[in-house]
Amino acid sequence: MRTILLALCFSFSAVCLGQDKPLEVYFVDVEGGQATLFVSPSGESMLIDTGWPGFGGRDADRIVAAAHAAGLKQIDFVLVTHYHEDHVGGVPQLAERIPIGTFIDHGPSVETDSKTSAMVAAYNDAVSKRRHLVVKPGDKIPIKGIDIEVVTAGGEAIRRPLAGAGQANPLCNDPTPKLEDTGENARSVGVLIRYGKFLMIDLGDLTWDKERELACPRNLVGHVSAYLSTAHAHPGFGQAVMVHALAPRVAVMNNGSRKGGDPAARQIVRSSPGIQDIWQLHFAVESREPNNAPGQFIANPEEKCEGSPLKLTAEKDGTFTVINLRNGFSYIFFVSKHTHIVG
Image (cartoon, rainbow, N blue to C red; front, side, top):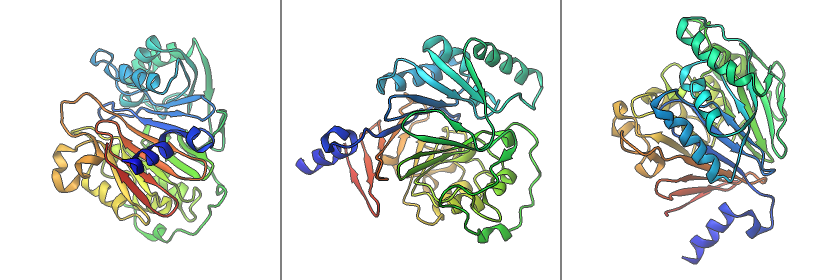
């Protein structure tokens, strides 16, 4: 018991070790959309995407609950990766429930159908009442305590390797016989979040061709500690040419019970060099048991659920912990190994 308490102290209380406060990341369950909340050691916050509209404000309520659990009274930045309803649709409901400082996006939508236009109009109405930033590759999100760099936006990608990156990528010779996506997915805002030696990447729903711009012929991003599955681990997204170049130690799938969590996408991550664990927001019903993570790594094993989140805390030295807030199960990832705690 004493060993477990000391490990919990190491993971959850920087005060115990006299270190800087950790970076906290909440992977909010929005049923196959995205809502990822970052809380800097400085106390400033950024939410990437806001989940779906409707459902009685379900997704907005879950985001606010995570914000309050993190001790936040407002969200300083809301970054919208692209204009699809599972990413931007929840903005109006969220803005009614908690103060928001600044909205960030890639600029106007390239999709102009009536449904998207109405959704973007609702988003623009919320943005008009607050500060607004349009970002491009190479820009930094001005949050104290962590470094957040935009690596893709508006269909463009960074052109020079980041610090420590630039290695040749042998997978670039593999064929890519897929059609080009000219819609909003390809324009996703992708960001690299750095806190000391800890790095995490979130690429929204970035498409295969834009992944290759980051990965080929050289890996412009480098290796990361944690990877959020691109496009909820749908087939055709999160290709090996990108995921294997990133070589994450941990992957988090923001899938729904019947959206994402595809076995082929999972296998790409599972075969990535250095991968240790895959955590899921939902049990993927259609993928069945063999193609899901073990139960303790899944935040919501039942299709009808309360929407439990996953949480990650990272220290400046690169140590990080992933916690399943449903059951208290967690792993601490040290520089060269990890250890588990059962709550």
